[in-house]
Length: 480
Ligand SMILES: NC(=O)c1ccc[n+]([C@@H]2O[C@H](COP(=O)([O-])OP(=O)(O)OC[C@H]3O[C@@H](n4cnc5c(N)ncnc54)[C@H](O)[C@@H]3O)[C@@H](O)[C@H]2O)c1
Image (cartoon, rainbow, N blue to C red):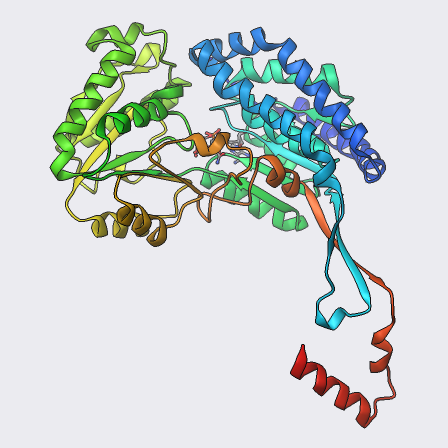
């Protein structure tokens, strides 16, 4: 597996000069784009959409070359969401761009007011490797719809996907509109030195903090789409079979390398064995029995050797501390393969309960009291997603009211990402700000507040101040 590393020495100096040159060129374009209308913006979105569809086979081949991703998963999770994002913008941009009139608040009698949506200007999009196309081009659609110029830095860990994204971007845009720079952390850091107007980062909380610190130097606004450990609760009233099918689909798509994948499951002790039985049956029907799973064409691979070793170390640590492998556990490090693995009896101090797993291991933890589960969730950083499986409204309401997470599903997993009318994002450690649809447009727009005078009532308060002025202020304080 090739990792696209940053060039060293004079080559890197050259990259930095290139970045600066493109950034400066985008400055001129960004000023012009302030006045861009719907037609110009949508032309770009449409061209991007067509180019993605034209390169569909290359995107599928890249997904396979980078991490053995099945074609269906590439279509479903890399191509479809970008097309949906583009179509949403094509249908609704006119409405999104339109200034929104507001009523004057009491103190503003005599004025009219509206919100104007300005492009932020020059924006930087930094993407991760797990859905390289979706998480580069999805935000790109929103940034273009909002009228920005963009520099895009895809992940160095999926070089085939980066190459196709680069091809698409170069086929459609001039570099002063959208430019792409490949490379690892040093290239990202060279980009972060620049005074972008907005930074849209998708990746780990650890790097999110670096990005936010860099943004602070220029007071650039940020959208941080981060990760974390997303818990899933299955209570004693849940449809266990439906839960097992859906949770395992959500978990093992992309081989567990999904930011909103169920990280671990709390299942009521009274139904745990039955639930595990359904899970084993679901895994066998999806991927085959035992050793057959390694040959399943429906399972992606772990992205590289480093991550394979990381996931293996989580498994080794858990079993060394007494965890039981319910199913799975087979490892072929050379093939970057770890079988879909369910773990039971994991002690709280196991590493797997501290770090985001981001791989095909699924801890299943029995519980007796829902309150205990809620207390455990609330003792951890707020997750990106939370899933609850139950037929009891009181339990659902309790979980939804007493916990916090970026998004949530009731009797479903991961589909909140695909819902174009909902904000997608985290909260605190799992992220800041939202993406998708209208929320994506807003992330890349400045909401400028505009007040227009009709009748100049403010002159009642001009100096010299008199007792009448004070009486008027007093009246305002009472009635506002
Ligand atoms: N919230 C979401 O929508 C979402 C989606 C996908 C992945 N994620 C999260 O992303 C993480 C996995 O992705 P990843 O491993 O690519 O994340 P990462 O944070 O390691 O890397 C993300 C991007 O940041 C760059 N980068 C790495 N180190 C950097 C540094 N020191 N300074 C500046 N940039 C740097 C990388 O080159 C890459 O382009 C997981 O935590 C996952 O949950 C979140």
